[in-house]
Image (cartoon, rainbow, N blue to C red; front, side, top):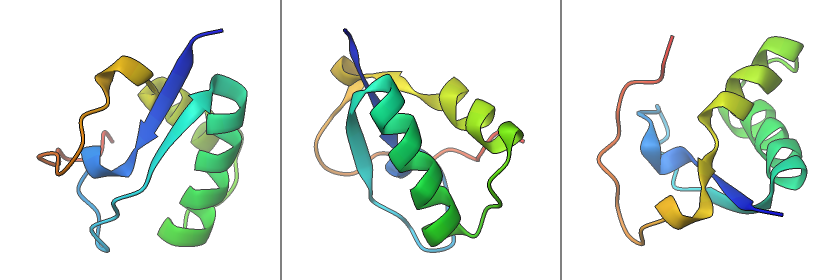
Length: 74
């Protein structure tokens, strides 16, 4: 099973979030949904889950330190 990453450093945010979650896809998605709700004020919805799933990257894309944030797709 390939591991994936959800990396808040990738996108611009009001709180300059630095969280990176790496693991099996289902676990990362579940944690990313909870994080998006608790830390970024999103509502839990099928659209949120599908949007987050589409933003997952392979674990091999991880780089330590800062990333240049890009605008959140919209």
